[in-house]
Length: 173
Image (cartoon, rainbow, N blue to C red):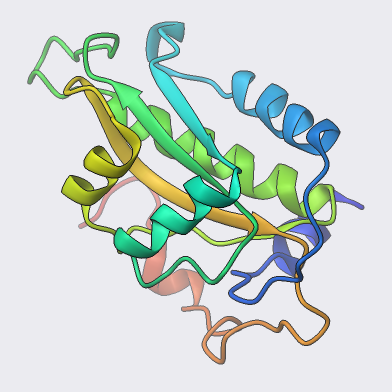
């Protein structure tokens, strides 16, 4: 599928079939995540693959947005591995993890899988349920699987602001 068409066709899947995701596809997704660009190529991303029935069940204690997916990816960053911008001290971890998450979502679409980016989770519960070390910072949770036969985009999915409201050239003035 051409990239532009695929990016436009992708939507946040919130209803999954029971079909398990093959390890080969998980491996392919992780390989794509590995190629995501990060600041100074520090590669601070850390990905927790939540796939056992017991680990997937733990999601219910962390978020109402688990959507009964058979699998989830938790994209994090290692705070000790991020690049720091010298001008203002801004740290790249969230941006790096967001790039990885975007690669993950688009790769899932290309493989016939559905996912959605979930930020509505309790970070303390995530830390406790999955034993995250203090320096590992969760950024996005991605429930994933094969979309259910009746899965469909949310009603607001096709709504987009015109470019004149979101793009400026040369200055914001």
